[in-house]
Length: 149
Image 1 (cartoon, rainbow, N blue to C red):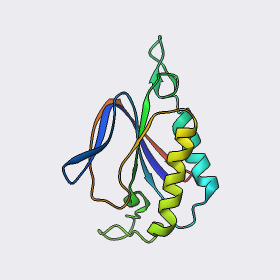
Image 2: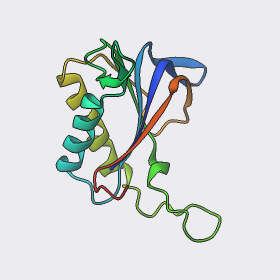
Image 3: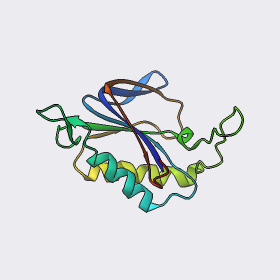
């Protein structure tokens, strides 16, 4: 499982000209589920997102988590995070999990983060979405449950 996590001042997801999820200060997490992912991958990614210390403390060091700053998390499914672009010009999406596998794992990430007491908003699984954000910093973190990077 992969995630791109961005510290944001605000973020929103729109589907068919209707805002379906939005947050103020917090994290935008784009989640890509791969074929071989399991509950262990969910726990790793959800734990990292909830505990990442990417918010500044009084000394301007990134030392505080989204929970520490009373932030929220916007979680958006993005299967293209599983793309392999090493060969040719068209991304291979062979590693992406099919919807019947990806949806329950994505939904479990949402539940795990909400269970930490964090306000959570989401996109719409398998929908064409427009994601708007104001990246604060900018701060962007790449996560991979298999620790390939």
